Length: 265
Image (cartoon, rainbow, N blue to C red):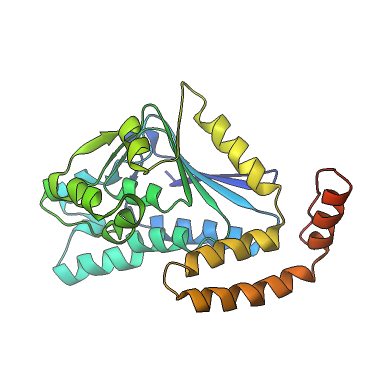
């Protein structure tokens, strides 16, 4: 079954992990290419201003396919160099593709997000969760290490001490704890998760697309650059934004006390 269901409407693309019968495992042949294709299409389409990532059925993603690990098939079979290449050429493609999205990404975590599934959710610029969501990076319980970049991104979200607690114990936390720790910014009550995700995406999609992408890029670059470099990048990007029709539309709308209509011009 294809991994991704892709739906686009009103400037928002929704990517749904679509293996609900098996809790949306990842790592089958072609999974990386599916994400690369989907994310490249978003990046090339200025009409798309936001992406939502969620899971079909009762899980967001249970992570790597444990049955394939047991059977030593696919990415999890062969020699050590072959397994390493499987990560580089398939699983890591998933993560790099999402990390490389130029528009804001909302992770709408509808159920368990475990292992690689948790790492995937953490790549969202914003993360919201259902009451049924659970989060865990349980690699050590399987006798393996976090091989999906989680040791890089999770400490940046919840701090090193809490990330270490999750990595070294294999504990799984519920949505309320994830909210308290800052892993998610809100918890949706009942069955309202996708309604809240769509409402948040609609607010984002109402913004001017060029400025939106520039803002995400500046935030991303700000993780690694000096303040002086960040200011220089902002000056250059701002000069470009001042020359757009969307900038004048924003100014006119503010002065005329109406909602702006941005066209990406």
